[in-house]
Amino acid sequence: MPIINSSKTDPNKILPMQYPWAREHYRNAIANTWVPEEIPMQDDIEQWKRPDALSQTERRLILWNLGFFSTAESLTANNIVLAVYNHVTNPEARQYMLRQAFEEAVHTDTFIYACDSLGLDPDEIYGMYERIPSIREKDEFVIGLTRSVFDPAFTTDGVANIQRFVHDLVGYYIIMEGIFFYAGFAMMLALKRKGKMVGIGEQFEYIMRDESLHLAFGADLINTIRSENPDIWTDAFTDELRGLIVKAVELEKIYARDACPEGIVGINSESFSEYVEHIADRRLERIGLGKHFETPNPFPWMSQSTDLSKEKNFFETRVTEYQTGGLDWD
Image (cartoon, rainbow, N blue to C red):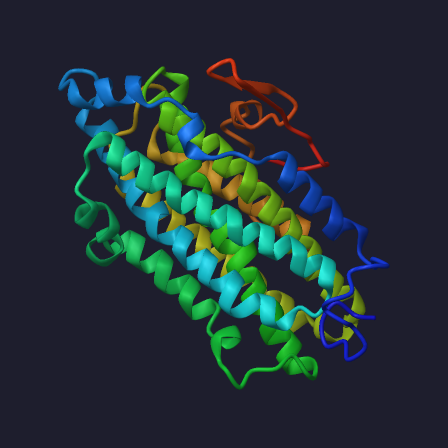
């Protein structure tokens, strides 16, 4: 039975399972369970209050990333709950998407926790997508890419409609979660490496682990639809998808230059831009489109920052051993 358009699938009957990869992503997600309140924020609060602890460039970088992610997480949750879930008929894939929706809620709670801890103005943070062009353009680009699945009359019947569905999945999973989040991840983890805003940095590590699972599931979903519907994978269609990803990279590079125009110690906006090109090539390869940029990874430490095999012990009361599940963090 296909993963979409299956009239024989009973959504209430998950056994026997047809797609073991969907179950594996679910199990890895459960192993990655966390909540933001596990991470102490006292040192971050003290650094934020001290005028000499952070440069103006670092403060700008933190505010811009909180501003982008705080609304982007709601956008992704709406995509999964209100749109994508309706068109995937396989029950184990749906089970994972329900878990993903929970994780998006945790991410939203993370930014509430950060704003409350630092005493930030919520109108300033949550209104940035309206005021800052490079944030607004990224959000509007994804909204435009995922318009089909929000159409109440949309179905995935026929080659053209399946192409539209895969187009929207690429917009949501590959571009939004797989590209648009990653310059921000690198910025916040670069600060953490310097011993600055370590609490928020750890929360971004956990978010990045979740998003890497989301990306892996989305790529597997796209590749499964493609294998079950080979007629959709025309030269014109793959050229269109490749063009969208290249455009997304340009938007993310503009955001990187805006959020960190002067750079921080050892890292500048150009290296963030190189990182975005590097991960875009990885995303292109993941769905069978081949590299475009051929840019080496300027931040090899990013993989170390998100090594799921390490253990975290919060307040010496809870140890969580994370599983790798074959994920590719870069």
